[in-house]
Image 1: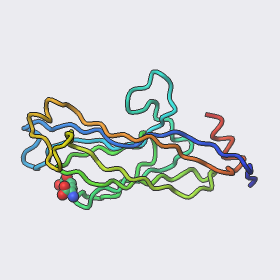
Image 2: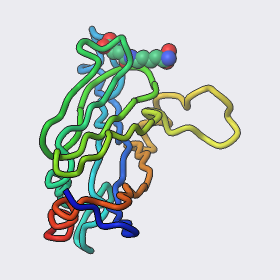
Image 3: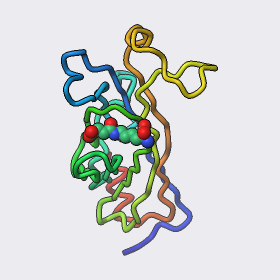
Amino acid sequence: RVRVRGLSIHRPIIYGNTASLLTEKETSPSGHTHKWTVAVRSAASGPDSDIVGGADDLGYFIKRVTFKLHDTYPNAARNIDKPPFEVSETGWGEFEVNIKIYFVPEAGEKQITLYHHLKLHPWLEGEGSVPPPLEVATKLGPVHSWQYDEIVFNDPFQSFLNILTAH
Ligand code: SLL
């Protein structure tokens, strides 16, 4: 296993969530108010990609993404082993999602951990910690909360570099 010393290669990603209100009918009897999707996506897609990233083409170097949800969810640690790396659920509250990204064995790299605050409410400037009333939230539409990041591999193995550059 040969490392390519002095080389550093990166892959851009975005991670985060979208959320929208459930209809009144969907809300009862669970008490859940929102449906949401939390995801890790490639940010390296072309101009035709949509707002939350394009092709789910991370599978060639990511083998698993674990989304650790709030303990109020059954099986809170959700393992996703192929793209799209995402979890969709319903709920009533915001919380911190712990996201662990595991790489293919060729990488010889440890997993990385990201944190994302699952956002359900269209928090308004200067309104403190009180979410806007339902009719306001309804008017504002779905909430998007995404962060850009780059996964950096330093001194990658030659075989892994080949995998990365072949895509
Ligand atoms: C809060 N600290 O109090 C947060 C916790 C937890 C959200 C939010 C669970 C849904 C279910 C759900 O929405 N949990 O499975 O019943 O706001």
